Amino acid sequence: MGERRGRGRTRIGVRRTDLVVASVGALALAAILGGAWLASFVPIRDARAEPFRRGSAASELGPYVTAAVREASWPMFGASPARARFVPSGLEPPFRLLYKIPGRGLIEMPPVISDGHLVFGTHEGRVIAARVQDGATLWTTNIGGCIASSPAVRENVVYVGWSSPAPCHRGKSEDGGVVALSLETGEILWRFASGNVESSPAVVADRLFFSAFRTRHDSTV
Image (cartoon, rainbow, N blue to C red; front, side, top):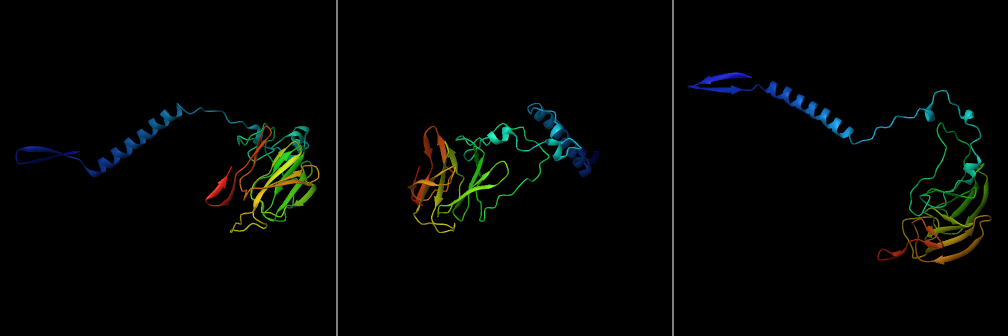
């Protein structure tokens, strides 16, 4: 700062560099105080080193498919009707590729797992079940409709929504619905026509819930 005198009065002048330094200092102080204030509300948890411990090789983890994995269940999109996307698991890195399951078509939504079966659908209209243990294909069923959602499994029955004839394309007809298949064999048990089903069905108790549409102005749950 410097004094400027003129015509009987004194003015205090501030150099631009002083303002810049003061502003930067104020911002730095605000950032420090703000970080301290935020940290007081954010719980800090010590990182666990075990999942990423050095020197861990995949072979040290033992067989990937344990009894717990074979019995694990993810029977519908999100694992449950609440779509929580969580099941207890002891799996941790490092991971390694064990097998690949050919779909022979676009797989738009994730598979489901029930009773040792991994089940998914493709844009070509195929429902495929594979064995969780080794990825071996157990059965393939062509339902003839575009599959753009995850199946749901309940008591050895697979419920698959379909939307217009396969393969999937932009234009939609009014055809669509849900197909029920045997989890063990892939046999079609029944079909329910409702209009296009592109959302993943959910099973609650003994009820199957899904949404369907025939046109932009005609949709139901």
